Length: 223
Image (cartoon, rainbow, N blue to C red; front, side, top):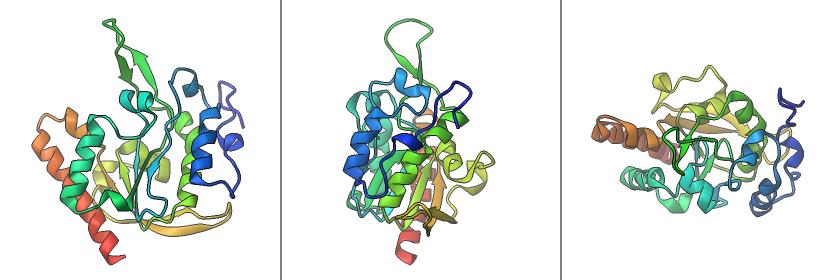
C-alpha cells in the first residue's frame, strides 16, 4: 500500500528468497520505496560475514557512509570497532547494517555544504523494513545488537524504549530463510555509538556501550 506521498515501500524492489546478499546489495540501489533515495548519494547496504554470529543494526547511513557506500565508516564506526574489541567480539563474526538504507538529511541552516542528519520517520522505517528482513533471512545470527532507538523500533515497534531495556537479552523471532519462516534469536539493545560522541560525559557513555556489548558477548557464549 502506498504511503501518504504515494511511495510503495521497498517490498516490490527486494529480490525473491533465492537472492544472495550480494544480489540484494546490488538491487537496493534501484529502490524507490520511499522518498529518501531522491537526496541520498546511494543506498548503503550491510557488510560483514555471511555466517556472522552477531548482527549489529544501526539507524541509517550518516554523511560519511552515504558517500562511501558502506555502513559505519565514519567516527561512530571507529568508536564501535573499539568498543567491540573491548567487549571481546571479533569483527570476523559480525555483520553491520542499518534499519534504513538511505541517508536522511537537511542543509545546514548556517549555509555551506554540511548535511545535517535527520532521524528517519516511522513511515520511512516501515517502507525500508523489507530490506532489513531480507538481510536477516539470509544470515543466521545467534545475537542481534540494536544500536539506538530507531533500530530497536524497527524490530519491536514504536513502543520500544531503549532506556528501559538496554543491555538486557530479549528473545525475538527473526525472519527466516523463507517468507513464512522465523527463527528465535537473542536481541541486546544498546545506544548508538554516535550518542557517545554527542554525550557530555563521553567516558561514561562509552563505558555503558562497552558494558552492553559485553552482555551481547556473554549471550553469544551461552546461547
